[in-house]
Image 1 (spheres, rainbow, N blue to C red):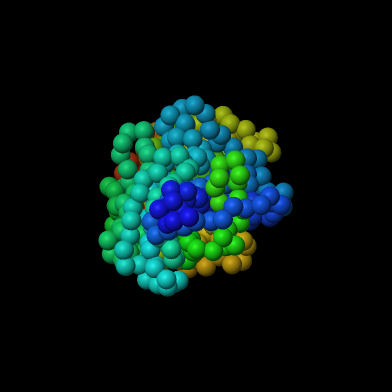
Image 2 (spheres, rainbow, N blue to C red):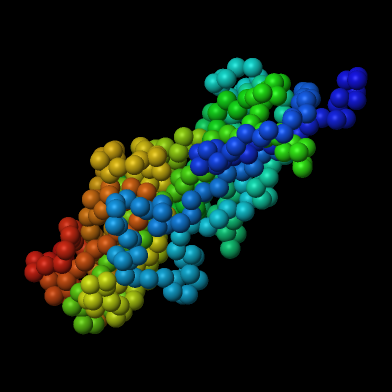
Length: 391
């Protein structure tokens, strides 16, 4: 049999990205495998990995913790229209970057090929040797406006995602950043190193006789690199004194950017701007009647760590404090910005989650002039402490 004939009868490889559970489910086949014929420029099919989208699973911090019991604000059709769905969305398109290392595993990236993939199957030509491969979801927005920016030019060894500053004032990163940053869109990434395309049939995991395809399974999993925080300021004993909000809020101390290759956020804390809404007459899980200012904020998470890989709050590396500020509108026509320290909650919920502030309006003296005057309030539970506005 000559080489030309061999080329016409090449077998295709399927590199199926899978988590450990899938790996352990594979069983050896007793069916006889035909010989594997390969050549330089071989076509390979690659199944893109999936991501855990269930918030109840992803936010399983402690045994018995149920974020939905704490989340009083809810999420109705208007919230969906204004802010989108409450949780993560399943990606349907991907950006893929492939780095050929030749025969040297761990080599620095000297060239890159970029692909956009629709669905979960990727096919291209491969040569023998080692590859690194980076995958992230393609950003798709309903209005066509995208906040995320991707830096692929500074170095081929890392793709960095970030956003720009908006117009909202930042209270806690001054003077370095006088304005808050736009929140990113949902972003997931996966990076596999030293993927080996081998000439040896024994290096492949199994053969599918129906499709005549050899399979090689690799351990690769998409992980979120943006983290959802659901914030709610619950007003007790309000009795109409606070009538609403101006629709905007800020969460401070979050990372400015993230590396898609490592999932590690940078060590540059910024304030993230997001939108909120005011609801009246809701009931907490404990049966208390409250008015609530709530919203959904996407961030790059706590600086200087890959929060998806953290398993205990004790392991969180966080040197900054985190504040939420909300501008409330009072029934006398005045407004004032209230600022709350939520550092402990952010550190406990290092992969995102519910951030709750309980405030007794009986402890607040109504402002007597407009202009967004504010005070810093460390609010853990509403009590009989009294707060006054700085005028």
